[in-house]
Image (tube, rainbow, N blue to C red; front, side):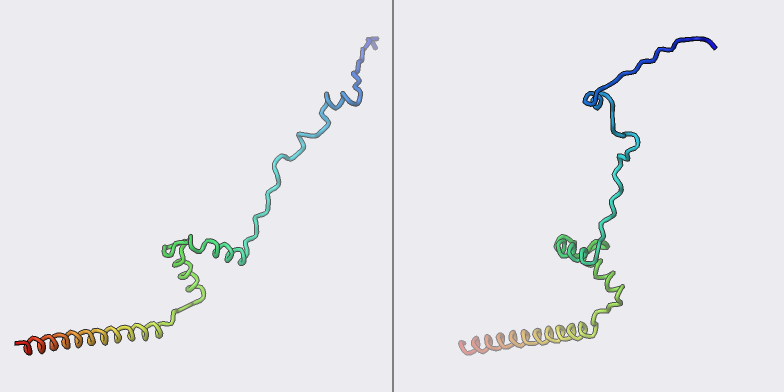
Length: 124
């Protein structure tokens, strides 16, 4: 064995300068990415609240994202069929009233013409 001298030295810091020179917190083991947040739950109440808020912003017609689309898809889902008998009866009543109105207008014109002819022949 050889007799070599080994000089050891050490630096000593006092408590206050120690924290200024040496990092005392862990940086490599810390997860810097925040944990994923759970998606907010969307309830039926939330849906109708948003629907009411957006009611006039939703287009009336369209293949998607419209009131027409909501009516069609919801009607299909609940097997809803509009009351065609009542609609048909109302259409027939409208047609009947239109024909009656036309007949009365023709009668009015004929009476006006007859009155005009009577007034014209009596003044001769």
